[in-house]
Length: 450
Image 1 (tube, rainbow, N blue to C red):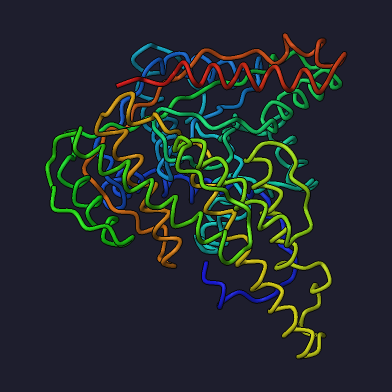
Image 2 (cartoon, rainbow, N blue to C red; image 1 turned 45 degrees about the vertical axis):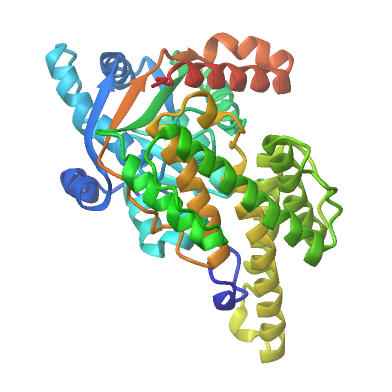
């Protein structure tokens, strides 16, 4: 988002679900064309879908409530989930003679910030598809109330990404946010209070992407472009993975040095000479400094892990841009509007530091080294492209496409929330923590290691 275009605005409004079956049918019909036109996905395969078909049958019979908790490595994940539920699931149900009363669909939870960068039309479309918005990083009462109501009484099962945001890694899962587990326990609580007998489940769904053929040449070309962007000159254009790794490591080290000097010189941050430390140690210290620069401006104290801190910073920035005291913006004086715009611009600039950190939360110093596959090279080179694009002020949505891919979706074993409910009532915080960790472990087991 270009800070010069930021203006102070009234507070963000909650976008309620307003399911429209005609819009749903249209989107379902157009999805294969959209995948072909707008993505690199050429094939989508599913594993263990009969288990999901059985869950849908039980849901439609009124025996269970469930939420599909899907991995979120890519912006294409929602399309894959749509394809799973709308296309693959009915085929498998028919093959396995599992009778479904209605064509399958799902309500879903999405970040209220998506329509801010993707356009207001996306918010309308998500609402028409039965999605409900929620603001991360704050107590969003309308959003939480809607998600809770849909989980308990919605005409479809639920879907949500417990990682909260894409992390760009095919084979690493970010720490999960606890909200999905909390929703599960709220659903179990509401079902029990209503004297209903449904069992509540959370179903882990793995999503991964594999190149149909290793795109070593596009990887090398993108690596060369990034080296040029940061001022590295190279004459070695070998496609040998060991040579590419040397260049990738050198690029990462160079970018770290640039940013360390940037924060030392212009933000007066104390970053000692870190040349003797590992790349991972340097990266973690740099990310911490980036967050501290933003937290200092918003007068926030560091609290929780880096993802928690990113969410709190995001909400703080939104509160400076989408202001409660600007509800009747047309009644404000031009001076008040001008000062509000200045605050909004500065808040957006400080949020830029958080956006950089957000892209690198899941980065490790060994991801490519341990297994130098084309997929892992591509994940890392594209994350570095995100980094350079954000610094250059380019559109992060125009990510390079390295080659045609296959998406692999794996349905995991359902985790019973109802079986854990008595323990949750005794210690709610511990109950949520344990369920979140078990979901994290379940999603991790669904990763296919190439």
